[in-house]
Amino acid sequence: MKNHAFQALCFALRRWIIWPLRKPCHIVLLGGPGAGKGTIASQLSPMLGLPHISTGALIRQEIALQTPLGLSLKERIANGGLAPDDDVFDLLVKALKSIPAGHGAILDGFPRTLAQAQRLEQKLESWGIGLQSVIWIELAEPDLIERLSLRRTCTNKDCGRSYHLKFDPPCVESVCDACGHALAQRSDDHPDAISNRLALYKTESMPIRQFYQAPDKEGLVSFLQPTNANTKQEVLAMVLSALSK
Ligand code: AP5
Ligand code: MG
Image (spheres, rainbow, N blue to C red):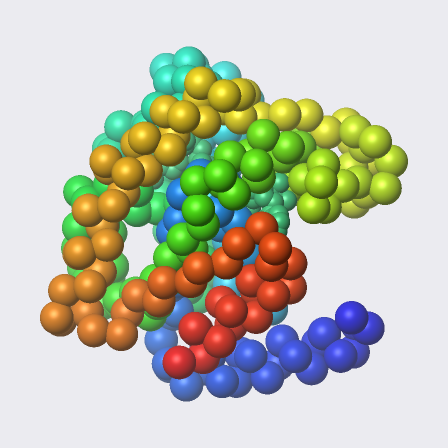
């Protein structure tokens, strides 16, 4: 899309979705491993002018920096396990506090357990704000596995762009189109870790569905069912349509 057309689209989206709220807008993106949370958040973030907070990326940054927390989580994450609720919550709150006052955020991969959903609600309430929308991307398991097995990610920590060898390959093999750094497979994208992540999604994240479907949260959550036959642009259009409601 040409730059001025993109700017006009962003302006229109902010006018329809963000500004009428007159308060910080917090959007949660949920879905199984590989559902496309990061892809959608990185498209939405510049369009809506909201920072993208990925708890997975925050944890990978701790691991890359070899902080005590990163070192304690490294093996667990590579095996596809979840980080302890307290640790992830601390990372999330730190990231939320770094956002300029009055701004909201797009939360990618948080909450991931019922306890996290409850703590997020309490924390936002204590700040006098709430969630505006929860988008739940439901992709069938074979599609999730196909996406994760062929994903490649830029190793430059300031870029981190994701590619897919079949659906979205880089122009030059193993090289990031955006910054020229090497691409690599994520440590948790090997078959054993993928099956652990899928299992934890079912046992730990599914109970959040009921939480966000409670009568006092009517209209908060939208369930989207794309498949691997849908392009990124088509999925983005589904998300924008859900948000504009
Ligand atoms: P995290 O990084 O959040 O991993 P995840 O939830 O497993 O999700 P992914 O990042 O793998 O997938 P995604 O949904 O972002 O999909 P993507 O856009 O990349 O977390 C990593 C780990 O950290 C967790 O396993 C856990 O251990 C820990 N953690 C994080 N948060 C935590 C929390 N709250 N509590 C406890 N522990 C936590 O897309 C995938 C692929 O599909 C890409 O190759 C992409 O190019 C491709 N693709 C995207 N859209 C399309 C499309 N429309 N068509 C075709 N291909 C597409
Ligand atoms: Mg992601």
